[in-house]
Length: 155
Length: 251
Image (cartoon, rainbow over all chains, first blue to last red; front, side, top):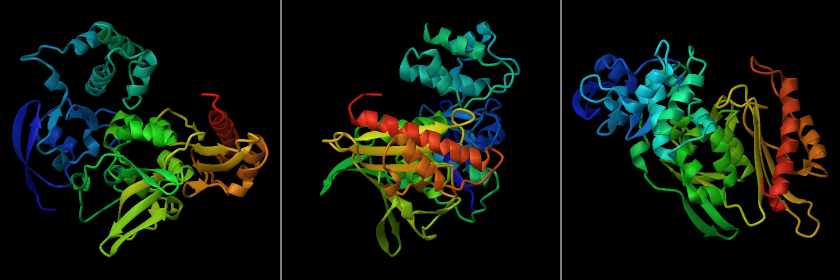
């Protein structure tokens, strides 16, 4: 398949890139642009470690082709952070509540939870569970993650 | 896309249909009443939230809650789901129970077929290689419609072991079922619509009759016998809930 030249807007920065039509958004973000916060997990949209926001909505980077994201706003976890290493308030809540151990799932958890809180304001614990059903964590047992998101939504 | 990532599909050419159509859901009138027109690229999230879908096909709006996760619902489309023809598809199941038709277009023109005529087996459809689904047409729920969606999964958001979708209308005079459509997923090589003649008597009797006609295969997720038992239990629950809704009893 013939490579295509696209403009990818990632965390408010434009990138001019050559991509194959079959390259996933995950391939390009992680391997191409070196964004370590977008991660390969399952390759079938189940685990949530490749979550990014596409025009503000969570999608799986592994199930979206890079060419489909051309010209649209892509936000990864780093895009939530301020200049330098300033954490987003939701990340602060994750830290305070001990909601991460190995941290592999955390970017996807944070982006998904942020979308939920933006849409619903103050979700119930059941609503948080439902929204996070596609984000797997193999360390924490989820309770602290729910606590962190509840704390953030309550701010 | 999962088929590509899992190397189950090896296409030489990829065509992105997404830019081709931006139409929203619409409601039209035909000789039978309202007709809900869902463009094939309607996302699951729209099915979940759109007012026309909630009113015209509340069954579908409810069942989409069980489809995948928030990311899948943001990208997945009704046409894509039907064309994928998964035998455990919630959307395929609801399309059958709602009496949906699909509008298909190819180089030689278009045709409209009942959704039951679309499915040909495991992940297989009757579409020609050059054809695409452009619209899904669903007769809108009329006043007095009852509906229910029931599903058994091992993990929330996973593929259904068995799912049942039912729509019913009651006889206004007797309160008995006048017409009912019961569709089942996870019991055959495709989603199936139960023979309407099997609907007779109580919910339990009907459910037992429908379950007897099924010969689900065993796989790593569940045995055939367990699936048949689920089909009976879930069908009875679906009919009871659909009748209660039709009778105006809420829930």
